[in-house]
Each structure stands twice: as structure tokens, then as C-alpha cells.
Length: 352
Ligand code: NAD
Image 1 (cartoon, rainbow, N blue to C red):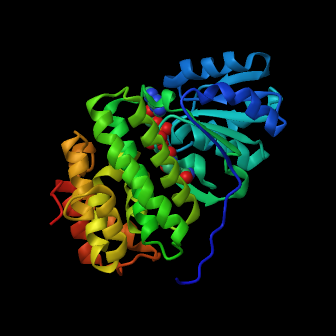
Image 2 (tube, protein in one colour):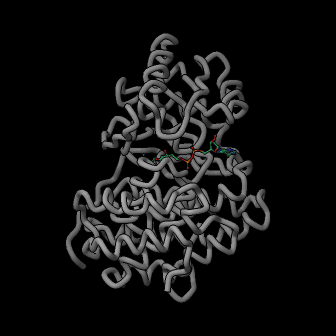
């Protein structure tokens, strides 16, 4: 076995149906007494449930989390947290809400308890993103890693089936790229393969029945593992392309990941045969790229960038941005081939 470094990140995970009820004890364990509850406008009811559970220990609810964490929202939330004397933030929701918690923590060091309701995985990473003047800046900082994560599958039952599929494939993308990361190691490989397999089992069942408790539990478990991989090792071409498409062309996050992943895998397949074999084994099917494409397509997820708002005229610019700075990727970045990858993702063709 080759030598490796594995850095454990200091977070505590509480997993299981009904585990939301443990939130007050988890606050005690952190020594926190007043929580600001964060959510999107659409998840206000969930935040109110959390506040009711905390009683007098809920300092208030901030319900204006939105995608990509605009700096203005982050400032407003920091101000509210400070005015209400909150000594922790409880973020209930997807990556956007966790992201808002991270923006508060980056500035104030306020500990975050994350209660994820999608499969995006942000809760397991020290990565933050803040958008200022139309530009999303990302960085890594140990202060933004949620200190405690409560995974309660019951809270993801209401995630619409379409979003469940795309969010689940978004999670798989972290694990897939983790398998061919330059700093991958046997531990992250185990988590990545297990995470992809758990989601691969769960998503078809969720598609068939949105409130299948066992499938929801499997999916959240998979999302946890995939998020841990994202937090532990470096990502490559796929994440770069999705960051570009989301940031510069305002495409929706999980859908973009779902569409691009099969093509990014097809691009990297010749240079990452072991990783591809692990993905293929986790999902079944003839190849990693086709297995991911088929999982999306047969379960009603979008497979073409043209169907989620990208214009064909933007492909050249997207390619330009993706090629603009070099980063580690198993296969060298070849302009013509990356442009073709984007064309295939635009049209939604099944990878060969
Ligand atoms: P999201 O958080 O924007 O959620 C999408 C919508 O679904 C929101 O309106 C939300 O309120 C709603 N929703 C969430 N859970 C629900 C549920 N159970 N039932 C009903 N509605 C629900 O989307 P996301 O895909 O979870 O997160 C995307 C964002 O997270 C992006 O900005 C992305 O960059 C960021 N992200 C960051 C990291 C990181 O490590 N920093 C990792 C992954 C994603």
C-alpha cells in the first residue's frame, strides 16, 4: 500500500430517524445556550419546529438563506446573531442554509449545528462560499466546519423526488472525484465507494416512493459519506466545470452536477481506471459514466444543459473559464476535448 495522510475533521454526527429530538442535548454538549435558527423562506415551518423544540433557548429565526450566500445576507445574519446574543447557529436545510451558517461562523467563530435536509454534503466540509458583486469566492477555514451534524432522515421525506435524485447525484459527484483525487487514500476510497453504493440503492426507491423510510435513511447515510470525502480530498474537472456553470451562468447547483458528472467521468475514464471500476461496481452497469447517466435519465432527472437554461453560445466561454487556471485532474486538460465534453453535456447525449 502506498503511504498516505488522512486528516480527521473534528465533527460529531448524530444519525437516525427522530434524532432531531436530541438537539437540546447537543446544544448542551457544545456549552451553548441561545441558538439562532437559520432556514430558507420555504423551510420556515421546519425552523419553527426547531425553535419550538428549543423553547426559551431559541434566540430567534433568520429565514432568508438563499443560494450562493450573498454577502449582504451574510452581513444581515451576522448582525441578527450578534443583536440576539446567539452563542450558536442551528442551520436546518440544504447547502444554502448551511452555507449561511458558515458565513456567520467565518466572521464570528459561532459554532454551527447543521441539520441537513438535502444530500449536498456541505455540513461535512470546512469549505465556504460567499458571493460579492456577482462573484462567488470560496475558501477553506476550520471555523466554518459544523461542530455537530444531526442527520434525521425524517426531515428529508419532504424533499421533492426530482430534487432528491439530483441532490443524490450531486453527492455522488463528491465521492466520484474523491476516488481519483491526487490526495485520495484508502479511507476516503472506502467512504466514497460505500457512499455511491448507498445512494445508488436509495434513489430508485425514493423515486418509486418518496417516503420510503429505509431508502431516505440510506440516501442520507450515503450523502454523509460523500460529503466527508468532499471535505477530505481535492476535487477536479467536474467540480471546476460545475462551479463555472453555476457561478457564471447561474445554473441550478444539483441539476448541473447531475448533467455534467457522466461526461466528466467519461473524460477522465482513460486516466483513472481504478476509480471508474469502483464507481461501476458500486452502481452496476457497463461503465461508471453510463451508470450515472442512466441513473439520472431513468429517474426523470435532467440530462442536458440546454434544458436547464444554458445557451449554446455560452459553451465557448464556459470552456475558456474552465481552462483558465490549471488544477490537478487525472487526465490532462485538453481544450478540444473539454469543449466536446461541454457540447455533449449541453445536448444530453449518453456517454459512449
Ligand atoms: P439548497 O440548499 O439551495 O436547497 C434547494 C431548495 O430546496 C431550497 O429552497 C430549500 O429550502 C429546499 N429544501 C431543502 N430541503 C428540503 C426538504 N427536505 N424539503 C423541501 N424542500 C427542501 O440546495 P442544495 O443543493 O442543498 O445546496 C446547494 C448550495 O450548497 C450551493 O450554493 C452549493 O454551492 C452549496 N454547497 C456547498 C458545499 C460546501 O462544501 N461548501 C457543498 C455542497 C453544496
